[in-house]
Image (cartoon, rainbow, N blue to C red; front, side, top):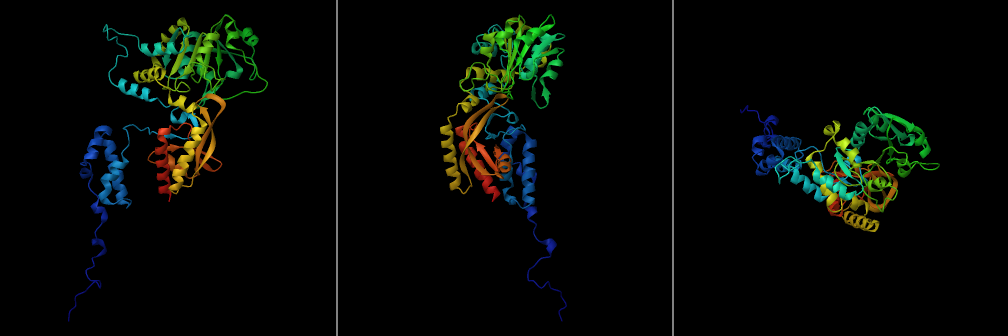
Length: 450
């Protein structure tokens, strides 16, 4: 009699001896020999490549991808650059979105940054071999764009420009300013605190809604360093209002410093109420401060334009070294000033008829792919502390609300806005050449959401 025990299932193996698919996941060193990953390591560094490989292996262990696809998955997961900032498509309808870095640089500015990334003649005269003034060509470009400015200086942002002016000209003295212009400039930073930190004393005049030239005249005295006018670029006061003009203030016999904020160098036909540097200087301002990464459409920087003696005092102040800009900013700024129109300028001038046509074309294409989408009219904004209250007619793609998160976290991040329970992708700040990238991002989000 045969007493052997059988399993009852012919050819079956004990459960703990069945093949484990995880054993087929390739080792890290084997994946890293993939030529695509070797090439990527030269651009991104081995740490970034190894992180992508480990993430791909984790997906394989979870059963999300087959073990044989680990290398392909790792390649797909590689970041575009070694830095942590990710390029996004700005479909918010806000042309200068602070959270998205404000102005997008022009192609000319990007090329200039790349050219300046290596050794440059930033402080060297190649003809004589001697030291030269830093940023001399960009300062010349600024004077060309603002003929009424006898001199110019560049610092790292708009707030630094105003703070440096106060430190150089008003430390221990008074700055006369209207109560209606004591603004908060964002992220909790307030203009009075900024100016007081330089050692200047603020002499407030007038009221929130009305300040006359007589109010300033009554406050001006021996301790007055300058009168400051600040453009309230991120809010509007309407109704029973009064503000003194630069020409009226210049007649008081003390310097007038004007912070125009948003960075227009000359009048803009679409923004007639937005102050610009040339007009303020012609009206009698001694010094104008502004930002470079707003309506000018350039890199983050602060501009000081005006009288030669004031600009020299500012540029030679000890704090000037602490807030100076690097060669990349100088390169981008000069290319912005001398080059073709910027993405900011193109977005501001975009034809609403063309925007609606693009929206209908995209909606038709996406709808044919099964996406629930429709083209709608929209209202865009300038943003970035410029032209408050100005709306720009635009067009958008309207999608179900859940697309907002899916698009933000997709392979090509797209940032839209939520309105009335829908995700709107406004085309005002989206270059036409990015339409297909935008459509592909929507298709990918739709496929992932099914």
